[in-house]
Image (spheres, helix red, strand yellow):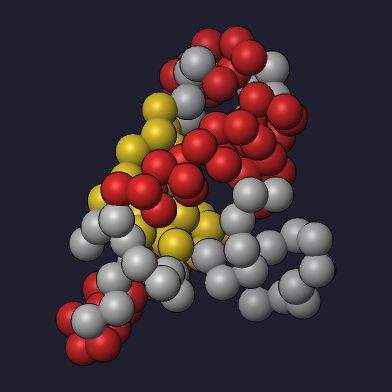
Length: 126
């Protein structure tokens, strides 16, 4: 792995991200500390614009609403961005709503509204 630039968090490829997800699932079984898997489907954005640079803008906006301990990468290459929100104090409806609203609000600040409507956000508690 190369050096990490402070304002440029690592974004894992699909293979690496899925391996990290498997490890986190095992860690959760052992520690009983859950994590949240957030999925952002950007396939409609890419299909409409045919411009992968828009995905870079989505990733930049997303990074401003995540913590350093959150893990980012391709859940499904060039279709779905995955984020593992680890080290969570609790995972309940209120905390999930707070996280998704924070990300949505950041998108509203930093992205074209036409793009936001083409991003589908979902989450899972593995």
